[in-house]
Image (cartoon, rainbow, N blue to C red):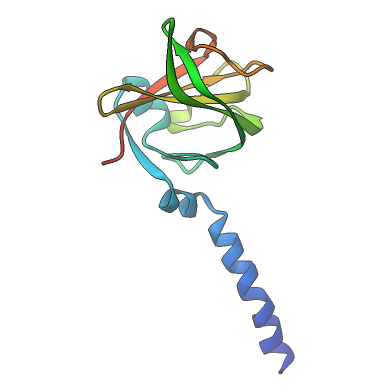
Amino acid sequence: MSPRIQNLFYALPLAALALTASPAAAQEESDHYAAVSNTAMSITGDIWLDDAGITFENDEYLEFSDLVADKFRVDGRMVPGSVYRIAEPADPVLLNGNKLCGSGKVTYLANWASSKGMSAIAVFTGKAAPKSSAEMCASYTYEDPQ
């Protein structure tokens, strides 16, 4: 095999790996949620969410390191949901120069069904896993995937 062909042989798998790790690839494999609330439309835009992370409309991405809870207290009521730890805490700049939290690096994200056909996410900056929506720095509402 010529050195040129051999280099191509090794480069193609690396290129394919880089493509699968991109935010666009994450969008293809994740559930698409359409922004509904004013905060979601002006800050996050639509999102793509799965158990690995969340991708925002401007292709910013937060990776989850693990699921830390499957229940969450919203307005005093315990609901089924997912609370994820953020792998590398950050407060990404999203649409119109807005930040996801605006008051520090996001360390946790919770997701739950807020009403029929709607889901909500809340973001948190604390060191400990949040137990309720009262601890959030921001929340956003989306239409569930169809």
